[in-house]
Image (cartoon, rainbow, N blue to C red; front, top):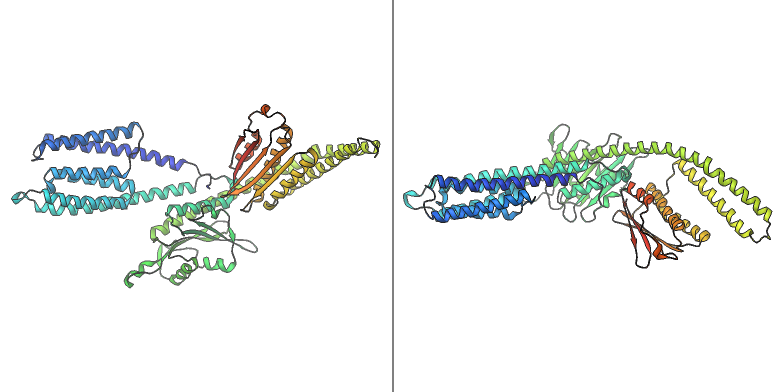
Length: 569
């Protein structure tokens, strides 16, 4: 689950890809028509199969024009692998038609390499480069003229030139893609967050994003070990796993000894480690430590990294410090069994850690401001509740007590009056408890949610004859604030059933799955099911939307109505 990150980065990337696709289609057209014009102006080349060459180029021009037109008018990306590989095949065909290694179409290979590198990265660029070199050499040697017309210098230098320039283009294209991905990740980290979801949700979601960025394999993990100031200090561990997305949304308490083992490295040092393997002279590549403040490498922490690799049970890992201005300090670990990390990874992960820390600080500040404003509002509401609601209820209860004494125990209405006295007394106690919790800012503990709902259901059954079936399956711990909001939503849903329907049976289901709390509040059909109209519980919908959730209503064929609510936790 994901945090409510805005879809702006994906939309921006989509627009950029559309622009690139249109530009590439246009450039393919320019190359194709330019080649046709050049050999028409200077027919010295081709010297053989002239008609076939003209026909082939004309077909390629039509193909390029069609692809460019579709990309421009229909917003089709056209960035699949088939296009640059088709270009390589057609360029090889043109080279075979026109003088082999001396062909003017040799330079067209660079376009295919450029497209592959900037569309799919370094690996694809090198594949196209290698294939182009091999095809050019093979076709060029087979179709090259013999005797004095054979140009050995071009036969030797052009493949070398193509491979060297292709490698440079592939490297730059792959590096550009990597930088774009890094910028996109940092933009997602810094997107606006819903403060109601809390700091833990922001940290856990960003750790999952780091795993996704590094193309995590099965068993790869991303950890954040924290030491939070206080007396005594608290030690927390957020653990994101590629096998269980969303696991890091709930931190776990760790012992001080475990925290010391994970935080043993200095607070300014980033490290990358891989288990030494292969020849002895290559093993120096397995370790890298870099002081982020001094901007200098160091060899002082090799033994510590070996111990951390053993603790994390990982063949390779990268770690950078994490710090907040409130004194919270820790380290981020990205552990992998198949990857290797370098200097640029340390620098980028340090930037990501700093961005996450800023987001957490801003959310903490926002939570504090909201809490203070809410505290002031709660005090005002509690005073108004006491003056405008509790006092009249007390007067009503006193009047009912007097009526009960006047009627006497033998009166036929005495039992009904006694029930009204009990209901008034219970309502006064609930209102006083509610006013006290507002004043003292006491949220409902998450584990008490189901107990409170069952108690509310028991009251509805005792006073109004409505049978409420309460079912629950909560696997994740609930935040007290979320539990209090959910209880108010369920209470309002049951109240709506009482006030707006004649149903005598209702149900409440509380389920937790994949970091999402799902609620189902339903009621059976009343005396006249056909009279029930479609509706949207606007007040409940507003509460759920404020928590970042969604609401929809389902009507069964038998008239059973269920309100479905999904709230991220």
